[in-house]
Amino acid sequence: MIVTLVGKSSKTLLKDFDAAGIEYETRPPQPGVIMNSGDAVKIAEVAISAATAVIVAWLKYAPTRKAMITTKDGTIWQAEGRSVAEVEQLLIGAKTIMVSDTKKLDLTSFGGFTIATSSDTEQDGIYGIAYCPICKQREESHDQGHGEQYAVNISLGKVRTHMRLVHKVKDEADA
Ligand SMILES: [Zn+2]
Image (cartoon, rainbow, N blue to C red; front, side):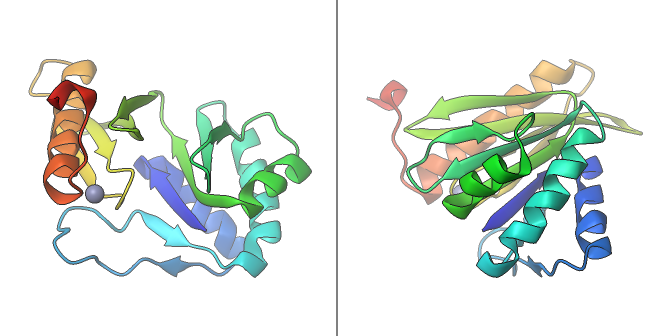
């Protein structure tokens, strides 16, 4: 199972995994992917049960923390507010779980896939972030003073272009 970490605050989950002795594999860099593709870790099937307890406890710690589970059939489930047993049931049949600790997390449908976008406020301004749902490539864009939604839209546009070019995804809008 792949755990994708959205926003720099979500990395605290890895510290909780470390504290609980849960092993995870950092994904190796993928050919052709240059930017920030390391924000995902892999957890072995045998560790899912222990990892679930950590994830549920992590979610309860702050209201900004969210987790979305994508099951093998592509259905997306929110993990917040569910019991450890319920989340474990979802994770056993899951492809990925995306955890975030950010104010803004939106989903946009594109060519049958779901693109997750968020934003991060850094010292030098606001960044919009979007993730390729297929290879998890991350695109970041500075808002250039135009605000959060502007930055998010630029990143979303980059991911759409990336999906068209790299994964040959076609959207209804392209027809
Ligand atoms: Zn991709």
